Length: 265
Figure 1 (cartoon, helix red, strand yellow):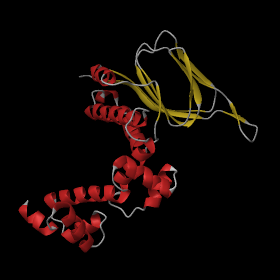
Figure 2 (tube, rainbow, N blue to C red):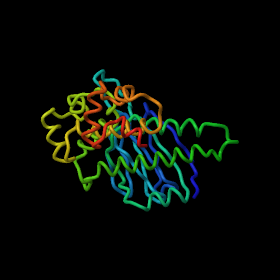
Figure 3 (cartoon, one colour):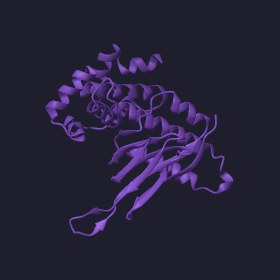
Figure 4 (cartoon, rainbow, N blue to C red):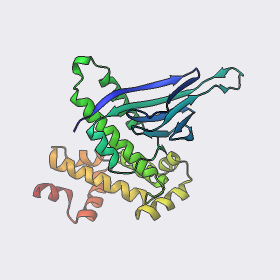
């Protein structure tokens, strides 16, 4: 299935800006507001776009974008609106779009991994025209679409857990092999420690530490299978610290010592 990237870039506006496609936007448009704010009119409905808002436009949608001046404390008028945007088309994008509901506007996390993926795609698209059939760009484009889809689904009202819990899970998954604290997780989502602990346990069915231990054990098993690292090195590298603690947690989970588990693989 085909993917055609028409444009991928970043815009930062310090002057008023207006664009319109009243007869219908010709391609798919993904626009993520990263700074400031603006207004958009999509299919006749006015939307106030703020930092973290993702706008998804499909071919044929009426679309207008308006960026106006704001008044600062210094009384100097200034426009401040920044966004990443992607314009694309193709049969793969058609299939991806139609397989699930795509809300026009969603509030998502400005996740650095997602932003880095967008930047990587921008760089690939700046390569010479002779490389227009860039296979890497296609894979980056697919990865970006899937990442945006996950972000939208996780923030949807119908999602089966509070978004704060999803953010906590993602934070733990990213930091599981380091010595993070529950306080760090609570601070990440802007909640008190007691509220975070209760909300996580009631939604996930296990504590944050238990969730982190499951991830650490999974990583440890992979390294036992596919590397020549010593068990002591694996224990330290996976966030367990001392080997005796790793041994105790591993045996409780799998009913066998790490060394015996490794020898039977």
